[in-house]
Image 1 (cartoon, one colour):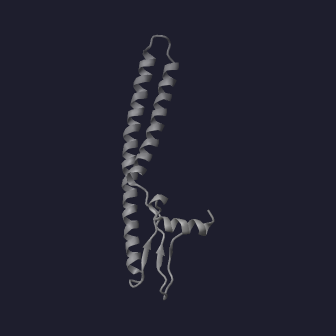
Image 2 (image 1 turned 90 degrees about the vertical axis):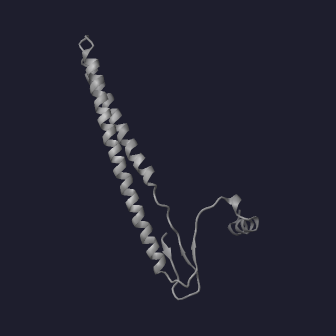
Length: 138
C-alpha cells in the first residue's frame, strides 16, 4: 500500500510497513533447491551408468561413485549459493531499513506516527473488538 500522509493537517501520518524477508530463510531456500537438483542429478548419473552394467558389477560401483561425486559437488555449490543469497538479502534488508529510517526522519516531526502491525484478536481488549465487530457486521 505504501506511505500515506496528509500534509499541513493534524491528521496522523500512517505508514504500512511490509515485513522484510529473512536472510536465513532465503539462503536456506536457495541451498535446499540446489541440493535437491544435485541429488536428482546424482541419482540420474548412477542410474544411467548402472543400466549399462554388463553383469560384472563394476558399472554399478562406478555409477554409485560418480553419482555420489555429482551430489557432493552439487551440495557444495548449493551451500555457496545459499550463503550468497542470504548475504544479498541481508544487504538489501539493511538498505531498506536505512531508507525507512530516513523517510521517517523526513516526515513532519510534529505529526503523530503509528506503525500498524497485525495482532491476535485475543490480545485486543473486548470493548475494541466488540465495536470493531459491530462496525464490520460480524
